Image (spheres, rainbow, N blue to C red):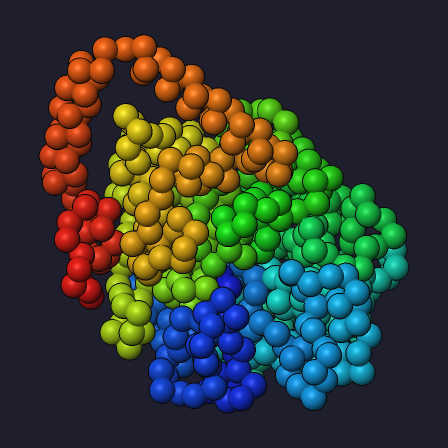
Amino acid sequence: MSYFLWLSDTHYDPYYGTNCAFSSGYYGGVFCNDTTDRLGRHGCDSPAALVKDALDFAREVATQPEFVVVSGDLVRHGVDKLFACDDEEFREGGEGHDDASVIEAAHADFHPKAMEKAAEVAGGLIEMIATAFPETEVILSLGNNDVVPDYYLELPEDGEQDAGGMLGLLHGSLNTTNSTSAKPALDHNDRPTFLRGGYYLREVHGDRVVILCLNTILYSSNFLPQPEHVEDPGSQFDWMEKILASCQKEGKKAILMGHIPPSLGSFRHSQLWKEMYIHKYYEIVSQYDNVVIGQLFGHLHSSEFRIGTAGVDGMIPPLSTPILLGPSITPLHGNNPAFHVVKLGDVPGGDTRLLDIDTYSVVSNDFTKGWAKLHTFSETYKVASSIMEKEGLSGDAFRAILKSMKDTLTLESSFLKRYRSYMLSGAGDDGLGRGMKSECDRSCRIRSLCTMEAATSFGYESCLDAETKSDGGGAMVLGAAAGGVICFFGLVAVILRRRRWQRQECYSAAVSVDEEVMGKDDEDEII
């Protein structure tokens, strides 16, 4: 058995502490242009000191990882703004902006400099990781903030390579290091596919596992400009099918890694990919379901998963592996910085699988208080432990977990509340039904569960409708029943539930999270 380090959404900002630092509008009044908080703060992207602090702790808990993966968004938000400060009419292109603004940013005089700067920042981030873990392979996928404008990437013509554009600049920055012991992330062999579409592969685990590093910007609902061949931008799907077919023939396993997941977001519950690409992706993965052992994504800055339970229109198909979303290093959206250490090895029977996940995060809103283990996945979700012992982090294990998250007697499942508490890696509440102190009523819980299962907006709305009708039917049945008997048994159930909560194990590394989940007094901050 081995393990690997999984980082996501670092959003490294070398300008933190200056007037050019990026600040989130979500946290009005938060300023990132001073260094009072040396390691950063909520509402800001990651300063170099925070990245290095995370890597220093990662070396303590993962001394010899087999490899390191970074699932996109290496670069800070708003690189364009570094070069557009004098233009009051300028609005950075990207999510939440109209297409005209994106095109304007892509044709601005400063666009070439902005592309160069994004590639430079990406290279600086990989340099820090590679220096912290010398002789360890660093494997990355591109995120929407690694290109400028946000989500904007011009692809070359069929059969050609983008040597001088954004992909060429990134390849040039990521295939060199200034340290003799640090290994560059890319090499000459990656050029054909990386310069064509920003994707490539790596073989790990004694060449028994192939990691397909996908460029999911191409499938995003916000992707611009639209390429000529919209059915398969960059010919990535064709490449993906060929690699998976080869793995199947040679008896190898595959891990799919990208940035933007083929599902819904948990912020706005919006569809993240264009629908035609969602269908194509799941068509391919379903065909090679016996080959794929992991689907690793980021983008949402939170530790989550997606899992299919039924093969119906708009829903994620019931695959043998879940979609895993990694937490972010950047604390931009109110989350605490965090990362995963993932165990990789053989299950009984000899198949290679992802076995378990340890999650580590800062222990307080004051990032100088240090890092600790937040939780171990198999210990948190013991309801599926017997499955995980045989199959590792399998689809069946996650379907059992999802089932345990359904309400009982209209009360929120303790497993769902624990899941929500870990989404922000021990931070408080983002006002969206997520976080340690967050309250989530029945409607909020339905939205959370439907988001875990839906692949498209249509699937999500269908799921909401079905759950709402189910609630209505349940209410009529309860109204016709004997109220006194129901109240009596309901009271007994609540008492038993409270006793079970009291017996639940408290995980030492995330005391504040578990205290809230178990309903204990949390008026005083526990760090």
